[in-house]
Image 1 (spheres, rainbow, N blue to C red):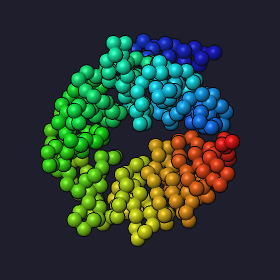
Image 2 (cartoon, one colour):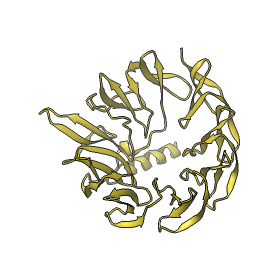
Image 3 (cartoon, rainbow, N blue to C red):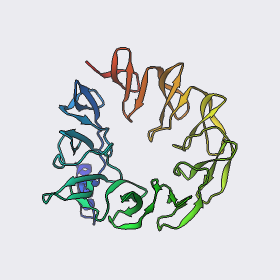
Image 4 (cartoon, rainbow, N blue to C red):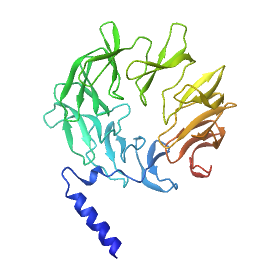
Amino acid sequence: MIKQFKRALLLFIVALLPGFCLAQIPAVQKLFPVWIGEKCGYIDEKGGLIVPYRYDSCNEFKEGFGAVLVNNKYGFINTSGQLISQMKFENYISPNFSEGVAPVTFTNEHGEKTVGYIDRSGRILQVGGVDKTYNFSDGMAKIEKNGLYGYIDKTMKIIIRPRYTLAQVFSDGLALVVGGKSQYFIDKRGKKRIDAAGIYDSFSEGLVQIRDRFGLYGFLDTNGTLVISNKLSTPSPFSQGLAASEHYGKWGYINKSGEFVIKPQFESAEDFSVDGYAVVGLNGKFGLININGEIVLSPVYDSLEWLSGLARVKTTTGSQYVNLTGKVVWASK
């Protein structure tokens, strides 16, 4: 009883803190999209149907919300299957929540195009003077105006005006942009920091791949210093301290010293997820390994996508969801 009282008192005190709201609490449950015919719904990790098959399209859940489509209009549902707003948003290729908001476009009651974001409570945050908004990353989001790109911050104000012909997301305080004929990294004030010739990706965990004139790759840090020499073939970005890299036709994983810690043995290798799993290919099939390189799901599937909780796989019998023990929790009919 005393423990319960202390916990209730703690929650009450936290709720009084400035800026606190229930929407700031990350969702524990995650739902997974499933299809029957042309309609989709969502299941939980045990395979129980939580959201009935009533939508035309169902995106993967991000930060506790999933984008759903009906009659070419999107809305967002929570893990209880409840809509947090009207189904009024125009079709984005892949709308999802990132850093607490999701980019949206819709036509208001006056017939005017409105661009901005929806937050976890369903509130619309408008961004004026732009044609399109993109997902937030590292506290900044790319915006588009007349085919040029700039950036806003969490106040929804334009911090870097649209002037770049190409632009990537911010990561580790830097973003890769193309201005004129030059390619370089800028900081959050729009100041040029690192020349990016031979770089085609964003920073990840403080490092980014760079290609030399011989086609070999190394890694730069955020100061522009080469910390892993150009000796690698087509490495992926770092994730969970490891980066997939090819060596004589086989894929393995290197650490931040450039050393293989999971030996090259796979036909393909994807980045590690935030929960420490990666999809690998072997003998024309796909499986799942953990951060130590141990096989978690044997490579017996025609395709495999890890959705942090369940694996969506395809076999000769159709689409399935399996858990980490390989148990089928849902199968297409």
